[in-house]
Length: 239
Image (cartoon, rainbow, N blue to C red; front, side):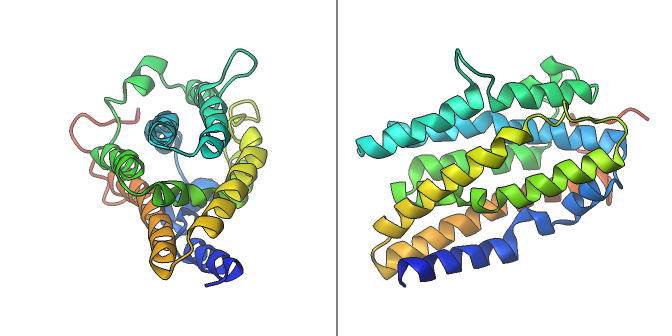
């Protein structure tokens, strides 16, 4: 495939598999979840947010390409923060606090669903163990992030009286960070996926990452919507 054809193939993966198509997300954006269900989503999604810099650090640690390491380091600051700015993890915790969740409970991750924990661990392992090209390609779900972020913020502000713009402050920087990060990763994949096999690996990595995000929502749907069976030890919303 040409670089343009590879990009089209990757965007087709997102059109078919990105988690904005999941029933749980549609309920979330449409205002059809209870406060407790939204709390469950935020608590479980924290596990993913907290591991993003861990998987990025794993990628940097095994990368022999200085230019790639230098470019990728910005992702660590985006999520962990630094002396000059608050990171995404801190902003996510502001949202969970606004939803009435205890920070220690959220950050301990003890009340997260087993499906969430397994999916996030699988993602970190993928980035740590597969080829560097596949590790970079797995981040390409960010190609589709701005659309879902805009829908999420608009839908939640319109439909839930227990959230406000301050509670959703995590998402504002991501509207610029995600396009920048995905543009870099896409260009890297287009330049380095120079054989049919490598192009298949890139597409497969994006399919895998879409599966990670989808399976996290499957776990939420099963535990908190239908059939509504909450695993032992997992977060139980207040009645």
